[in-house]
Length: 68
Figure: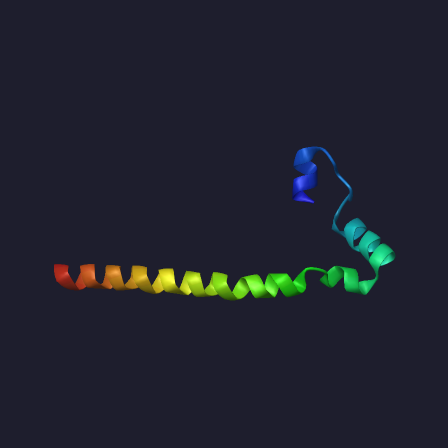
């Protein structure tokens, strides 16, 4: 919906119109299209985020301990 609005190609009027059209054309399963790849994408993204958090925490905690 966001990309369509920017490109001037607005397909749906609002969220409810979107839900209605998808369930009308594809059924309830259409609402879950792309869920599998999205879940698969989540695992590496969460791992990278956790790794960066831990690395930054380690750097910041060492800096605080050195200055005390």
